[in-house]
Image 1 (tube, rainbow, N blue to C red):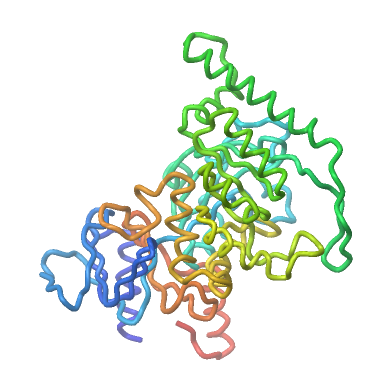
Image 2: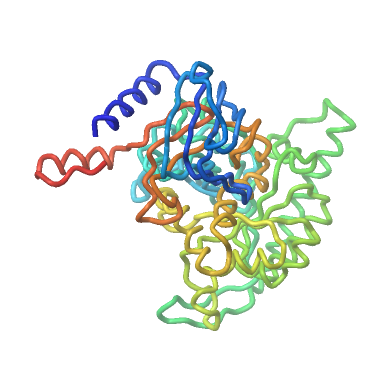
Length: 432
C-alpha cells in the first residue's frame, strides 16, 4: 500500500506539473496490437514516441538514461483502444436535450464538423478513458449526410488539444432497402421499401454535384464558393473517408457500385450486419467494415441468436478488414464496454490478439491514423495503458496506468472517486 501511495503521488506530480521525457515500462505482458505479444516486455518512450521494445529478461538498462522506470510485473500492456462512430464528447445526458450536440437540421450537411463541438470536459469521457478507450471518432448524426467526424483523444485540455485528425471523413446514412418488421419479443417479416430507388437517387445527385464542383475547382480556383460542396472535395481527393452507414445486403451491393462509380478512394461501411454474405465482393473492392455493436439481438426473425457475436469471425474468414464499434442506445456511456464487446467475439471464433486488433490497429487502418497510432511499435505515439489483468474481461480490466501521446493521464474518474468516498464513510473494505 505504501508503494502504491508513492507511485500515485509521483503520477499526480507528473500529470499536473511536469511530464517526464524518458519513460521505461518494464516486466509487463505486452500486447502489441498487431497480433504479436512479448512476455516480460519493456517499452522505452522518449518525448512521447516509442523508441525501444524488447524482453526485459535479456536486456540490461542504465537507469541514468531514463527519467522514470515503472515496473508493471504481472500486468498487461495494451495500445489505446478507439471508439469509432461514437457521439462521445458530443452528448452528456441523453435525456437532456441541451447536452446533445450531434444532430443538425437539414438533410445534406457534409460541412458540419464534430471537431469543434467536442467537449473535452465530459464526465462521461473520463469514465470511458479509465477502461482503456483512449480516443474516439466523434461522429455527428441525422439527415442523409450527417457531417464530418474527427478523431479525438479523451484527455485533452480543449478541442484543439484533443484533436488527432480533424475531418477524417463524412458520414452518409444510406436508405434502407427494407422497412417494417417487429421487435425481438414480437418478430414480424420486413417488406421492401418502395421509395428506396428515389432515396438512393438523392444521394447520387448530390455526389454528382459535388464531383462536378471538385472537377471545376481544379480548373477554376476562383469559382463560386459553396460550403457544403467544399467539404466534399476531400472525398474525391482521397484525404477524407466516406462512411456509409448500412446493414442490409442490397444496401451493401449498391454502395460497392456507388463507390466504384464515383471513384471513391476510401469508402467504409459502418454497420455491415449482412457483410459476411458479400465477403469476396467487399475484399475485392477493398472496402472495410466497422461492424455493429456485438452485444445486439438478431435483425431478422430467422437469424441465429448469436449472429452478431460471430460476425467478426465470419468477416475474418472472408479476409475482410474490420473493426468493432459501439453505436446504439446510450452509446456514449457504453463506449466503456467496447473492450468487453471485443472479448465476447473471442468466444465465437477469433483469437484474443485478433480481438485486440479489432479495436486498435485494424480500426486505425480503417480511419487512417495507423502510421502513428493503434499498436505499440517503435516510432509510434506512446498511447497505451496498463491493466491489472486481461483488458477484454470485465472482472480483470483494471487500468492502473495510462499514457496519451507520452503523457500520463488520470486512471480515476468521478465515479471511482465517489465509490472510494462512500466506501470509507460506510466502513467498507477499501478498493485499490
